[in-house]
Image (cartoon, rainbow, N blue to C red; front, side):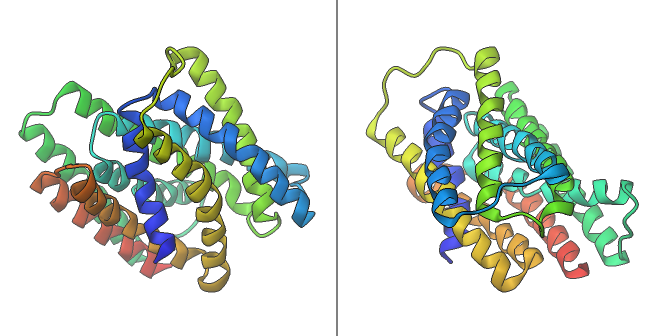
Length: 278
């Protein structure tokens, strides 16, 4: 339960920060705070760093699946509700399945059905939003969130062959270093002025995503994978969009249109079919 709550609420915290600060600057500060803490954990555990080709696979995951994905998700959070960002981010397994198929992996008929149903849900959401009058900022937010899901899928596909050979904490450490470098470049290009002040809410949200989500959330993620397997851990993440939507409604006053709920339900049903097929 704590695992699902942390992953879902991370989108709400990002929304609070993105409405006040430049999302790219906030992410750079977030990674800058987490990297030294992860270094201490790696040193205390004497965890071996990735070697050989695994090092490059972890680096690609850090650049695309962590830095690029979170940059897109946080930028999108400034334009659309956090529950919608969480839903669009959950489309990442659809991109992963498509990429795996292009790489030659076979898919069961149920997986094909789930993939198709998932994309029908995303299309339903987009079309119904457009029918209600999609503003430029909303369109930008939706497109950016989907781009983040695609980038995460690229990172996952590159990292997948190394997942059983590397230490998870050392992997998180290296990925965070690479993500920090990516965010530094993005900030230099599009970050705007450095934040000069912040409300207690923004500071609290930043501390939450840095310490609880960035550290404890990943620790719980590794525990869930070890106890229940990677597929079940990923399936549990499908609960993140409803959690984010509920918290956004209760605490942030966010509202989702009926088309968002319909498209989200269809997409999540398709993802569940894919995981059952695995």
